[in-house]
Image (cartoon, rainbow, N blue to C red; front, top):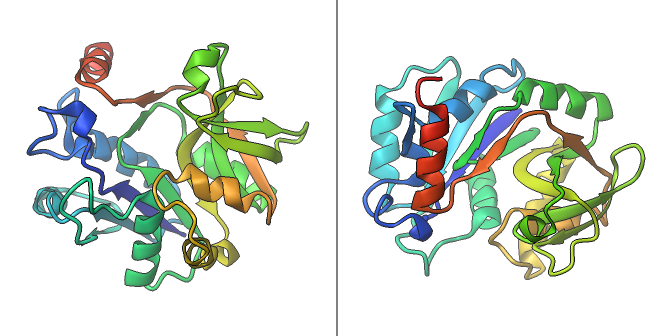
Length: 245
């Protein structure tokens, strides 16, 4: 398995915090967000390499971070060549870029680089291995207004995805989809198919919305939290909550 960390966004909603610093390198309790992600990935023995996908503007930041870091697994940073919000490839475009740049012919774990979460990726991986199918992680919410900000999944009694809608105006369930995915080896070439069909390259959930109609996808309901750090206020709130922990 190859782990891909998506870190090529520009995080304009977090300005001025992210004018000169990528969101994934913002610290929580004196440690960059991406370090927490890498630590979780490193609990999965089957992951052979971690690939961080950056844009051209922030690539030097990530190269410096990688050079100064101490990692248990082989880690590399690749530059997707984009320089602005207007020219970005989108998350799905970046996944395809990484697949082709690194010539990946293996299972992949895809994690959004701005995800700060407290659940176990190893437990998620064990679920994925048990199901032996493509997987996404989910959490239930009572707040219907909050659900409108997510992909929302309808599941059967075994956790198989029956329907997914990205940011629905009227959510059909209480199950929110988070941007951490595990894909089988035979799914990886489908990213090229998806893009060649002219589908949206941005939010990673759009690929999942396309995929479940073609292959079985299962949802892992995690214990713990996953924080969407989208504004300076939400960032400060998470920093205050986890300071000293």
